[in-house]
Image (cartoon, rainbow, N blue to C red; front, side):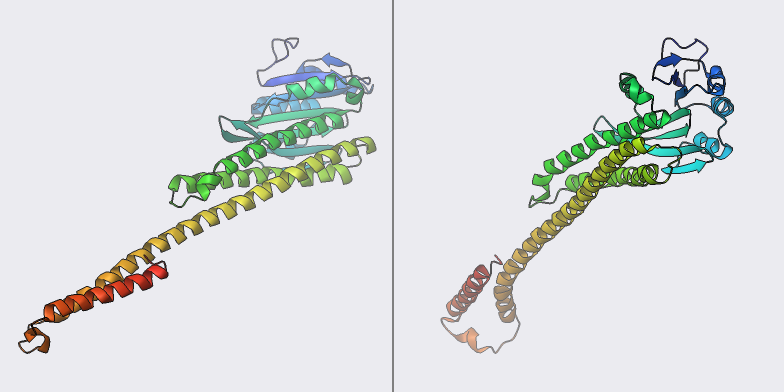
Length: 333
């Protein structure tokens, strides 16, 4: 929280500032927002919140004159990514992502933007936008473009945070490549592949709608976004497209990796079954001969011969040897 804000400022208010026509920052209190907006001198207001309660949102609804339906959506932290226009204002809901201890944590950011205000509401695992504001304030001539530049900076920050996650997924997949092509089955490998694909699917659900949001800001809402700012949103659209393509490629690679792993396991199991069948075939010949002469018949011509036993052993060995050579050439044993 900014130390220059009044002590009465709620803890969920991370930032509350006004920016003059030339981009200079002025710290204000929440109850001064409507007074600043009442003066038509080109000053605009940027307020940042983190998981506010209903009372605070109701207060800001009065200060910014927000639409009831937009505020109702902001009360609930599980919104699908979207952009909606309410008269001369926009409500945008986007999903954020960040890597936390090797896992991907997802959050949400709700944005209200009007001609002279920008209100960001963070929920869940969403990084603070303090670095975004600091970067913007170092370039006051860009802040002078108004709330649309602040919106661009926030969306660009969100999309840029997707890229390290995609790179981390790619490294994990490369690390599992040796296990994927292993001859023995590993349940752990399949579980890791599934977890990666699940997280990538969740990331894609966050990234894909961002293309529509930035596309609309570039082409549709021309009354809220000037011609110069549309170029900035087009740049965010290009970054989003690149992340989305990388995510789709990794998902396809994960699907192929899971299929290859299971196919290799199936082939290895087939080899084991084939070798067992080969050895069973070798054992079947002497078993059949022994069972034949194990029958309790009194008159069998071979039983009376002096060399019948040796001949039977020789025939059995010859049959087994012949089967062994045939199966060996067929690589069944």
